[in-house]
Image 1 (cartoon, helix red, strand yellow):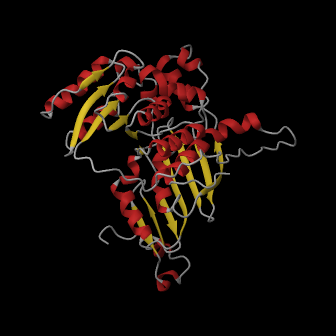
Image 2 (cartoon, rainbow, N blue to C red):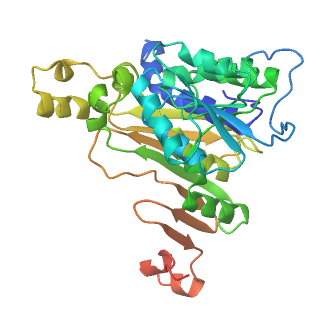
Image 3 (cartoon, rainbow, N blue to C red):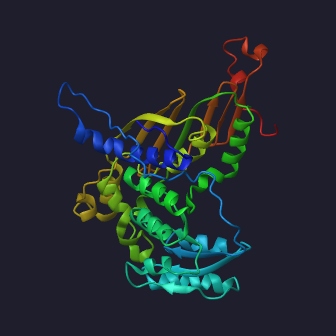
Length: 385
């Protein structure tokens, strides 16, 4: 199983990839004898000689961090806008396959009173020219998932640090490519899992680290987000470029987007810092929602309605850690359920959850609990507290 990972990034990324591939692979690798399903084992590969980890990597101070952005469709423009507010940052270059998207981000710089950045566009390899510049320190990647690892590796090989939207990799092999390249080049490589830094997640992480919840025994996370309309939206009208996310639904099952739920709870459980995720069991429902939506929106005879979608509507994955903790991660992007990342931590002295409404429950008083049917003794503390 997953052993001896040298950082939280590797542990999270490789377990995330295992979640992505497990249900899609076991049916093909299943033994035909007595219905036995053999586990998929992911051993750590032989590491390159002479490399050391980058957990505590530091570099000389940069008075100004010079940044190039690749991918200016959905996530990219927001990142550009945020960077205009940071001191000690210079936005040097912008890149997207579509020239109009580069121009829109140029307007963000203009509105902020900043100079125009170098523009790269028009072909699928324009991003390489950005990475090859000698006046960029950090490459920020916000493209489709399949390009994340190739772009990150190329950027590091050309002397750049990398910050990449999630998921940074879509296979275990890609995870190791990233780790090996970062170690070899001594460049920072971070997966931008922003949910780890949400206010409630940070607050409850602080509570867990200070022992308020006792020993954390079980955690839950999820990505429940109705993306049907966006998946079927024409790219020319704001949908995903070249229908890439819809194609992911066609080609993959399991949980292909686990990090929003997994990242915050992995921090609370000290994954990669004393514990590790050891094995998982993952199961998906059949697919119903995408076909039903396509029939309603485009008609039963439409190509969308006739298309086969591999992604099950609901995936639930249970992960067991080396220290005996459990994690439940769920994925659902094809139902009308309200947005939900769960984020629950259950400890020996307390419990917290974020959805559907934030709540904190601590040890009830023994007096209140003495009466077995006094269920109020085990309720959430008041908001005032």
